[in-house]
Amino acid sequence: MKRWQFWLGLAVSVVFLFFALRGLNLEEVWIDLRSANYLWLIPSVAVYFLAVLVRTWRWDYLLRPLKRIPVRRLFPVVVIGYMGNNIFPWRIGEVLRAYVLKRNEQVSISSSLATVVVERIFDGLVMLLFVFVALPTAPFLSEALRFTVVVGSLIFLGALLVFLFLAARPATAAHLYNPLIDHLIPHRFRDKLRGFIERFMVGLAALRDFKHVIMIFFTSVLIWLLETVKYWFVMHAFGLELSFFTLMLMNGVVNLATTLPAAPGYIGTFDASGIWVLEAFGVVKARATAYTVVLHVALWLPITLLGFYYMIREGLRWGDLSQASHLRETETTTT
Image (cartoon, rainbow, N blue to C red; front, side, top):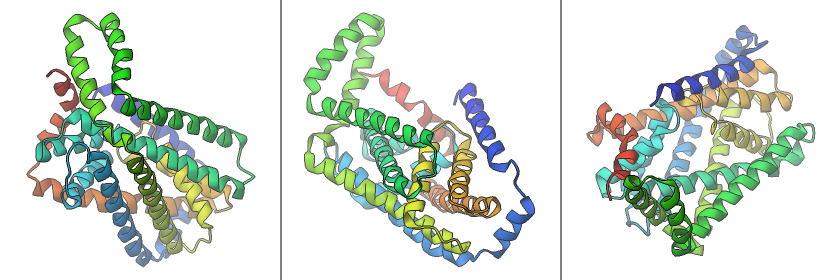
């Protein structure tokens, strides 16, 4: 991890935390934390791991053109990846996931990363869909948020269309990017870059099958509905009465905010955006903060602990995490 990336993420987190903590009565937050019914966290954790299982099912669909891998073997890889996202900045866990898949199943890093990028595009589209569906229940929200939803939808939809084109017309895509490589890239790097792009294109093969695209979209919606159910369970721990649409909106806004660079664990970006949505719906800031902090911990801690367990079981060492961060570069140097 380059030093400037770490400091940029830390700076973003500090800014978001400043807005989250400004004017906050910490004594009232502590009272809400002490009075919460934490038994509700048990079903919330259970439904979250069900969502992780569906994530694994979705990845299976994306990987099928490359290699058919049983979900039971993919699940630990997914969990290790999310553990990496939680303890390292800039979603290094995605590269770690590709590294473990390469190590265990001999799937190309570049191709694996392509499937991860497709996942993120579908996640972004579903998050924006959630916000769009829930916006009519919150007419008091700013026009800036509505404008952001429209712009974001166009960006993610445009990215999906580009990937669908690349998957459906690889030869045409090659005719487009090869001249650019020949004119813009130094000769000694051309073959290496072509090899990386070709392996990346292989990872988009699932998008050539319309049934697979539908299943990827369906599982993406199911994943985020299940995660919203987790929000609903944790809500009951604090005696809040919010509609499911409100929680969908919070889920969408929070997860779009966590796409910004931040400190490990999405500190600040998750919390400030969640508190802001709850305050907009009339929740007192102290209770909104207590709920958001507990929700954040309930999302972060269980899968991180399970990721450490799978990491030990797989025989991975901390040096492997460092190696994973350089693996994409390493693979581009081989043809």
